[in-house]
Amino acid sequence: MNLFDCPQRLLRLSNQLLSIGGAALLLGVLGAYGWAEQLSMGTLIGAHSLTILGPTLLKVGYVMRLLAEKPAQPGAANACYCAA
Image (cartoon, rainbow, N blue to C red; front, side, top):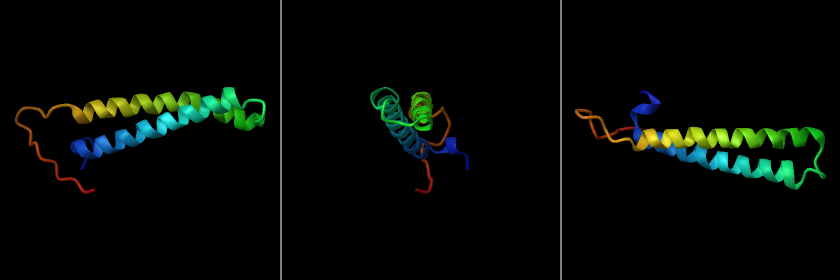
């Protein structure tokens, strides 16, 4: 079974990506700009990386949410029998 076959599974995954992306962006901004003086160089580079990774996960999660909420195609089965 394909990931895109079950809208509920896709919606659950998109919600997780949106949450993780938001948290990564928040931690990245706080670390890269708020606590920059207290962090080591490696940690600071990691924080700046999170400011790129976070919005990327947000965008992918949002597109997946749009796909999950897309109405069923005409003639396609509306029921989804996917395992939790």
